[in-house]
Image (cartoon, rainbow, N blue to C red; front, side, top):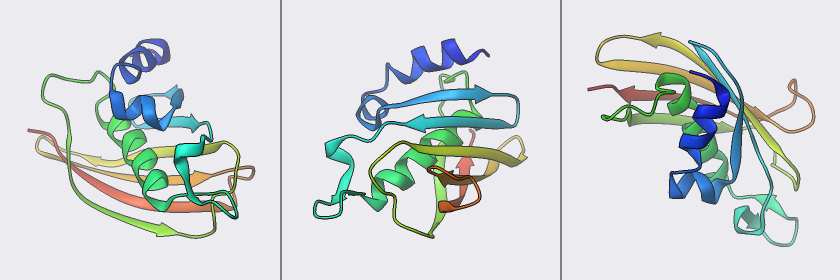
Length: 133
């Protein structure tokens, strides 16, 4: 599946449009995306930091795309997630890279890392599990 087709599918999902992100790269076990900062993403209006739920949702969307980039008829259903917030997400673009660590017939596990200017300075990291049937 090519990035252009995946981004066309992303634009059809209302919540993904709200998150305002674009898939930058994709292969059979990875997806990388970039989210543009927008006022509805603000969790702290004084400091203009991202809301933690927005960060987790963006990471979950990237993980789901890594698991099923074809947006199958039966979408992958998130069944469990753990997110560790490591530093504030400041005003500016946010990036996420999802790595499928295990994909079976019924379940998939995906680790996700999000960052801003430096990949080595993660904003959050998470582990997501999806039901595939």
